Image (cartoon, rainbow, N blue to C red; front, side, top):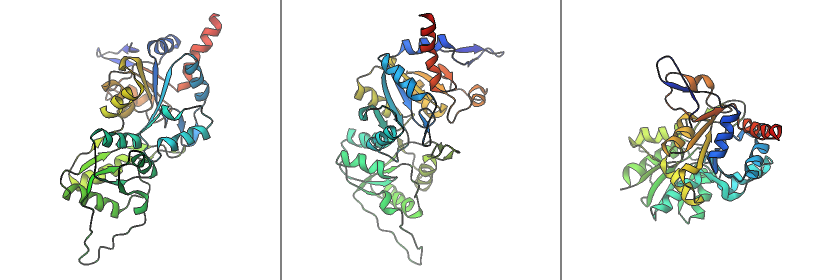
Length: 313
């Protein structure tokens, strides 16, 4: 299945998928899991040809699932973005890392409170699971004066700290989360993801949730439980939720270290698109050991299969 070519040292490296490769890819799987940022859209702009490609795959009977490590929105919030961009997507086809955090806590029968570093998406998903929480946007304006004798109280009933992308992260939130993790017995440290960068706009890359998680890991000397890509929990939960076997699934993404690694670790077919974070130079670099089964410039290249079928007819 792997589209590779031999190189001088006897190893292999990926090569661009041709029309036959694209046909084989589509024929070999029943479901496509798509990353969103860099695959479906960049910032607030749909990538050219994506709507037509999704329509073609649906017409072929393929199941589509949309996965994002961005935790700022809930599934309902992402449905609004899809709709606003003119994309025909159903709510049950969306899987965000904000939902993954809530689903993980539900899976372990969590009963205590959650302190949230993050935005409204995490809070909305926790509410839907009936999980108590504090922090989040309401702590955005809180300031630590650090005057003589300063002492911060924290809720001893917090049993988990969830860290998601937070445009309003501040020292108060970092200290509060640190106290909960270090001083509350058994307190969990959960990261929605550890992405180094993210596409908040289509103009450039921005520091991702890895920077927020790194701050808490540094202050607590603890490594988090990660629930977003490339963590096993997210894939397992998706497969169970949608009733899928892993050999039926192709993961399509723009990042080697999250999307493609997520797919390869889970035994999925993988396809890298170069419309987001990873460029061809990085993919083909001798230092890169994460090789997708297929790669192409952008998702709309799959439309070549439809065009080839027209010509053949």
